[in-house]
Image 1 (cartoon, rainbow, N blue to C red):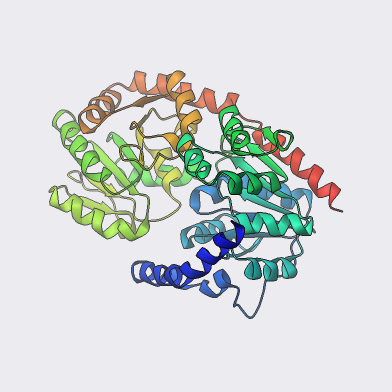
Image 2: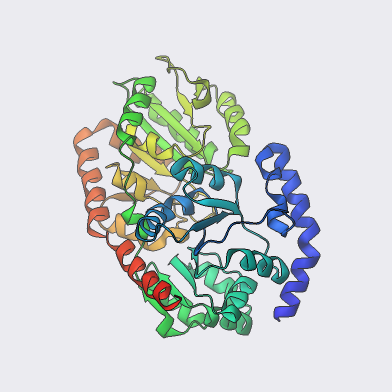
Length: 423
């Protein structure tokens, strides 16, 4: 099965490169780093004691406290971070500058990976959240390099997909040195698929341990002044294709009761920014985009967040939030930034990517599920009209985040054990 998997990847490689080129037509940054993805870059990376892979913006953000702790605890070790997306690379540079090395994640093919590992010679490889690459895992095992799946989550849907490749999935998971799962449910799914129980630990989600930078409050206050300090503002963050229509319909309903309410609309993928702007205009809403860097007029109805890495700033300046990917079958996104900012949070019915975190916030009264635009308008409009209720629900969210911190220390203790063993 391993040979068949590699053969399929080789056959798909031209299509993967063509897809990169296609995406680069909308987002030119996808053109950069293609040589790194196929192992053809003439100048390889410098040796690094730890290799951390974080797919995109969300994983980079989650890995930030881990990266800082590793660099502070091992200043001479050297850290390489790989990302799959250019937006992840940009966010890494915004957060850490040149303090860590970066390159794009190579395709999961043995010769490419062996060449990279020859140059890196890492003592530890850490893969964030849900990335399971069979050849990377196998090559690391053969070389005696511990590979840790950190902050690991596995939805029931994803587990069902992996189960279709039964023996192959089981062999791959048994090769992983440590799976640090976010929850008991995640751990149980990994074990059911074949992971060694003694190599699976429940550490919690490090996303509870993310600490906002000291500058966030000042940046949020500056944004709020652009929006209008006395207006009521709600954020629809990380929205996907098919969701903006529902969000804009909800906003139409809200503005019937609160005429000067402002919607801050933040699509998940930057290549969609122009299409979403056109959609807003088709709804005949007056629009200001973040990249215009100007204040909203009194009649501005929608502020488009057409930049990357600023969702936390927008949440810090808003009164309530809806987190996208949840009205469509994407599976939702992380609610914790909104909860940590003290905002009441609404989500749709599809939250399997963050099932445990979402259920916890819903159970504790910090978040509410909505089925569609009518329910979203009702919930959001109610919050915007009631400052006392907003504050009460927001405080519930802050309390949940505070009570669940500590995952980072548990994960670091486990990583330190593996680093010590690799000396």
